[in-house]
Image (cartoon, rainbow, N blue to C red; front, side, top):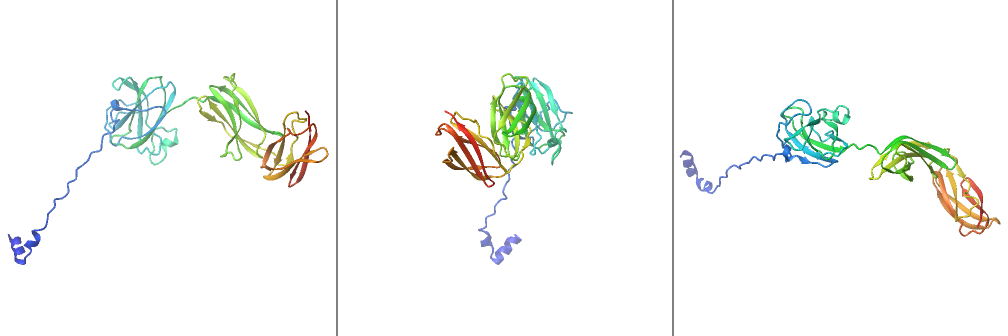
Length: 359
């Protein structure tokens, strides 16, 4: 009454009569949805291989038996997969995993008829699992039974702990080849690359690749079929006719399913002449072409002249020589029977090679 009287006294009442008084906004609390694979019965099926991201932050605990240490009541989520008959690996050892995980693996036809077959809390043999902002991650391997149902449970090692994780599951397929050794030898005509295997299984191709630095720029030199009788090992050899002065080689073995296995890298250093031209072959030639090799310590453009016995020029053309050993082919289809000369001009002078053309 006193306040109203004052408003009337000073003439403020008409002003306040038009003021709307709004109620304070109401905030509704939205609870996060429970993880879809919170229960074993709703386990997320995974194919092999698979990589998934998950969280236990929105999960509860189902009180399943522990396969990795003591029982606790931390949040957990479930996945499932079908065995392949091969050894598999399961891991949470990734940067996105931000809590101390445990992996439990069960085998059984259903969630009510399953038992522990493997588990891991902290995997100390892999630095990816034990180092970083959040160490103590988990990893295990397991030899699976074909067509058998498996369940994977991810939880924390301590009560009240939860977080995000990355999970991978993949097969550890035996390598298709057991390589005994690989080596290379430098000869006048190029580099010979040789290798021996102790065993081969389902191997289709042996491919030798070359690089000039051993890190990148790998190119295929030659591929050969795996020997059908090399189940208990085999011996192979190829000739690289155009190596670099310093060449790096590796063997890439390709399986029939397209998977590949890469060997160690080996190095071959050739003597570095300023400029040399090898002999022409075949000589005499009865076919349609001859070959010759040029080895140089640097890249350069050289001139090639093809001349007959009288010294008359038949062809005159440039070729680009790269550092190392180069091989070139000269056609002889247009040549009659007789004696011919190839003269190669470089910065150091010229070299002449003779060959005979026969019909």
